[in-house]
Length: 107
Image 1 (cartoon, rainbow, N blue to C red):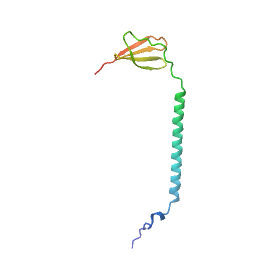
Image 2: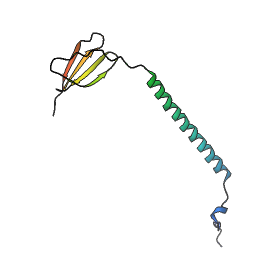
Image 3: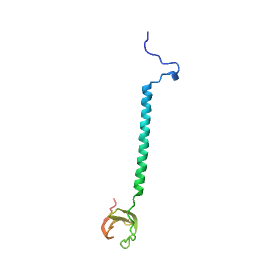
């Protein structure tokens, strides 16, 4: 006298729950819309970022005698040059004058 329901002989004959199918359909739709919105957001951020005009590169960079540039970076107010002898030279963009010199120490 076993009252537990027996699984069908053929697994393809299992009844489908309409509520579960509706839930899965809504879930897939929501996830698809979320992914599309994410892709649109990322593409729009790229478009906005790359349409901005970068700060102008200075026409002439005056370095102290005997130094050569290894790297360069800039902001709207200043630009910095890393030299071969491990110094960072920070120049004002408005005056083109050396504002600060930072010597890097090696460990």
